[in-house]
Image (tube, rainbow, N blue to C red; front, top):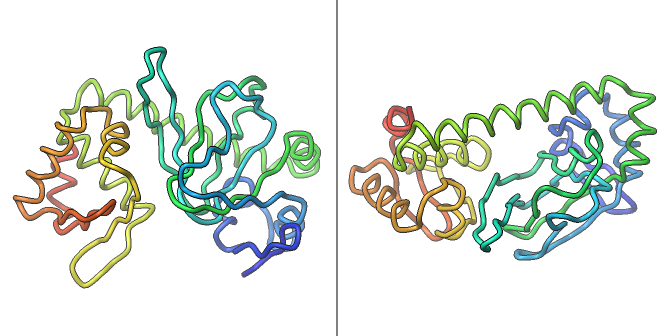
Length: 234
């Protein structure tokens, strides 16, 4: 169902998945969307940078966004990849301060944004939305803790299997062959997501392909044997 955001059509069915909207009825959600600012960005563009003032949140309408942090020596750590219906940048509402990560566009994307002042006013009238947003933050924290544990207790092939399964949950599409995951990530970005070298990750992917568990493509992978990948991810 389309809604209008400053005269730009927005798929309301997609954005209703975001915690900002999930507790609202459709008319209220449509009114809120109407107050938000749309943005269209191309791959490689930056939504905001680490250290920028945290003055608004974003909801992904289409495309993919990656959140990353850069170390003092220039190395990049890819924290997460977000797709349609996912929200980011909301931490600054609850903990004002500079951005803790940089948001890059992975594939051509449409976003809608809402400034913190407007959001606080809205939350005062709809406190149930604040609870949904906190639940979303708690879910992200849980995933971050799991990622830290995986770095300590899980080998690289296990982390690769888990990353592929996670990407498939959000971006997978059933085909006659298997579960196609068009992740749009380069080999280096996929390695950053796993927290390992590109060579080690490519070796794990090649091994999975040799076993018949996956089929590799350009910035995509088709999962052929999900049960075996799930066992390898444990």
